[in-house]
Image (cartoon, rainbow, N blue to C red):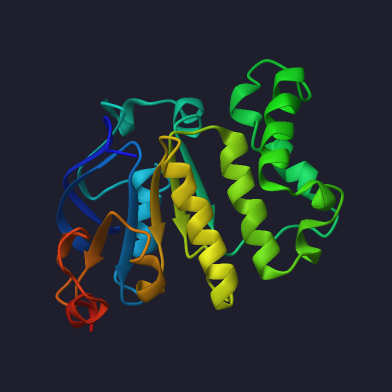
Amino acid sequence: MNKKSTILEVEDLIIGYKNKELVRSINVSGSAGQFILLVGANGKGKSTLLKTLMGHLAPIAGKVRLKGEDLADLSLTTIAQTVAFLSGNTHLPSSVTVNDLLQFSRIPYQSGVRGIRAEDRKVIRQVVDEMGIDDFLEKPYMSLSDGQKQLINIARSLVQQTPIILLDEPTAHLDVVNKRTVFQLLKDQTEKGKLIVCCSHDLAEGSLFADEVWLINKADNFEVVEMYKEITTSDLESRLF
């Protein structure tokens, strides 16, 4: 799918915690139908950037815009209807089932309504059928394998029906087959107009699916690498380490 409208804009962003700056001068944008791979060494600010892009952390300076609107001016409900954020380390009580999680993902649309609505059930059913996860619905999420959990996490983001999906290490601890399955599922969503921003240490595999790489280099500078150019994994790694 060709790039469509710009739905994520970052202007003169500085990220970090309190008085500790991690990365300065981030100026970048993301469009509908785009797969972006976010890479950098441990502790360089990848997760911090994702959390800043969806409002979990306030930037030290600069602006983030979602669909043209300043993130700082948006309600939590509007943000939750625009951006889904999935962490690779989800720990839940053993009683929480996959179906429970999918229903939780519809909360942004249930303002003033108690309990799940018919429309929510319809959306969940469509995603369950699309991803073939019917057999997992009544299973406790924490009982699933790492690969199964990541499939469910992607399903959660689809149930949330956001145009932007941010993922933090969705392929961690997965074997090669499951890594490719996850990356392909994410790539498939770009064909439906989603913007995917995926933080991953798996540079070799992830770069095969990416349209663009956002790279925090060894000097703590932010770079954008367009993957249609003749860029090798070695070229990218040399900037990281």
